[in-house]
Length: 160
Image (cartoon, rainbow, N blue to C red; front, side):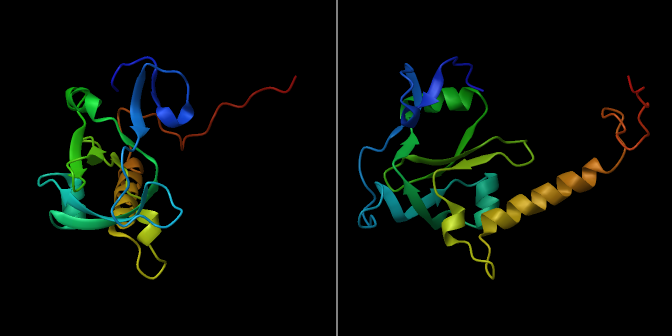
């Protein structure tokens, strides 16, 4: 997406000269004891006009984290140039989520919705993802001129 041949996460320790994911410089204020730098809850500012905003229903949100790495802010201009849009920021303005407008569901978050999701109360992010998947599946069941018809019988192969 960014067309950087050796783009990587510093977590992989690959020796790349282009780490787009780097160690967090400081901990969340309410860090869990013994947890990673970003463990616990953090307030977010969801940017209006984004898919994440429509999922969360507003600009202010609070989400759960459990990680030591985040987006290398030096690459934000390149993300934008590649079509990615920042859709959430942390309390200090750090990138916490990006999305690809126009894609059926391309949202990358630093927060982890699974940490606050329960069987009886799934996180709204997962519900939105499942709705998008069902919409895609339903659209995929209709014949399209661009896709091959996989439901037609296949040619039989001879046993050798």
